Image (cartoon, rainbow, N blue to C red; front, side, top):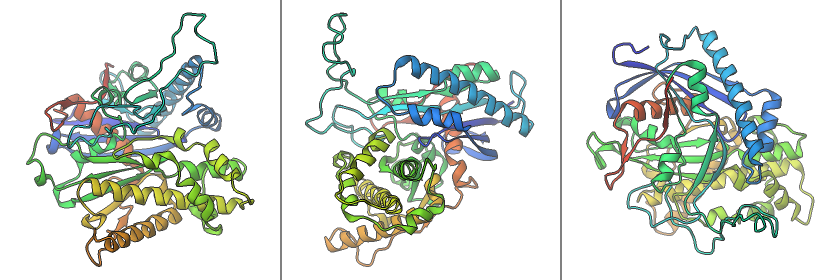
Length: 452
C-alpha cells in the first residue's frame, strides 16, 4: 500500500543459470532522476532439484516442442507462486487490494533468446543492443524435415529480421495469484523498436547511480556476462530525460564453467570458489579453439545467450583435441576463456564510447561470478594485458592502470540482490514515471501491465 509518495515494489528475477529465484522487496520514492530506492528484504531461493533439472534440459533449445514449452511455463508459474507466497508469509507481507505491495516487477525466466538476424543501420547513440547483421548469415528455418510442410501447405520461413526473445512465467498468472499489479515481459518493447532487448538492467542502472560515482562500469557475471558504462550525467543531459547508456553482452561468464562441471564432474552445479580451476592448468590449444567462436566476430553492441555457448558446443571443442585433457584443466581453461571474453568485451565497449578502461573510476561486479576468485583474478590480469597492448599500439596513456574491481554494494544494495532490485526499479519507472527517451526522441517504457 502506497505510503505518502513511497511505493513498495517487489522485484523477481531468475537468470540464465536457472538455479534460483531472487526476490527483492523495495521502497521506491519518486521517478526519473529524482528516484531513490531502499532495499527492505532480499532472498535467493534455490529451485528444487527436479525443477532445476527440468529447466536445464529444456531452456535455450530451439527445437523444444511448443506443447512442452507451454507445460514448462505452467509448471514454473506454479512453482514461482508457491515460492513467492512462502517468502511473503515469512516476511509478514500481505498482498491483495489492501496489502503491503503496490507493484511487482518480474523478469520471468528466459526460455530462448535469439539475437537479431538482420536489422537496419543502428541509430547514432542508441546502445541497447541494436546492431547490424554481419554478411553471410543464413536464413532461419523452422526445423522441418526434408519435404515436411509442403504437403500440409506450410511454407518455410526463410528469414526473420530482428531479435526474438521469449520469457515464461506470465505476469497475468502472478497478478491473479497475488491481486497486485504486475509489470513483466520487458524485452518486447525494445525489440519492437529495433533493438536486441538485452541486456535490460542498464536502463535501471542509469536511473540509480549518482553523478559522484561516475564514470563507472557495472559488470554482471551471470551465465552470460554483460556490462554498462555509466558516463557523467552532465556530459549528455542535465536532469531529464533518462538516457539509454552504453551497454552490451560480453560473452560467457559462468555458463561454460557450469557446463564443464556438469559434464566432467558428475553433474556438479558449479566450481565453488574456483577450487577446481585453481587446481588445473590452462590448455592453450583448447583456449585458442574456444576463442574462434563466431560470437567474437560480431560488431558491438551485441546480445547472446547460453544457447550460443552450450554444453554440446563445449564438449565438441574438447573432443577435437588430439590429447586427453584432465577435467580440472578443462575447468581452468574455460574459466580463463570466460575471463578473456569479459576483458575483451569491456575493452571494446569502452572503445565504442570513445574511452579506455583506465578512464573509469571503478569496475563494480555483481552476479554469481563475483564469488569465483579465480575468475576475478583472471579478469584483472586480462585487463592489465589489454591496457599494455593499448599502450604499445599508441592507443592508451602511458602507465595507465585498471580501475579497482570491487564487489561492494551499490547504494546499500548487495551485489547478489542487484538484478532483482533493478527489475523493481524498471517496473516502477515504466508504470509511474516518464521512462526513457532515445536520442531521436522516441519514448521507451518497457514492460506489459497485468492488473491485480
